[in-house]
Image (cartoon, rainbow, N blue to C red; front, side, top):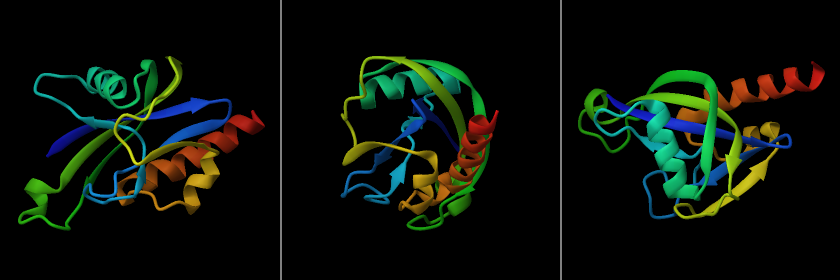
Length: 141
């Protein structure tokens, strides 16, 4: 099972959505930025490294927001081995620098509820739904 750390980057009520490159696996799907853990790396360290590489930002990670396991069956000989992921989602409210697109087709700041109508990577849908509920709770608190 591959392990992936993902950042839900929030700013002024918006969240940063990233669109995969057209020629990538699941091309043009929207997702949260992040990437695979390297051997011996914690999810937090992997996320800080990936966001620096992909967006040129240095982040302070708030807390783990969600964790899930997901299996992508398309294009794999053995989905349990090749398409199986454990994904750690972290909230990020503090970062230095302005996100600079270094790895995606495009990046965009969106209201959390807008993510529900976008072509989101299937494995991110559960986290998006939780994020929308979380954002609604924060507005009424």
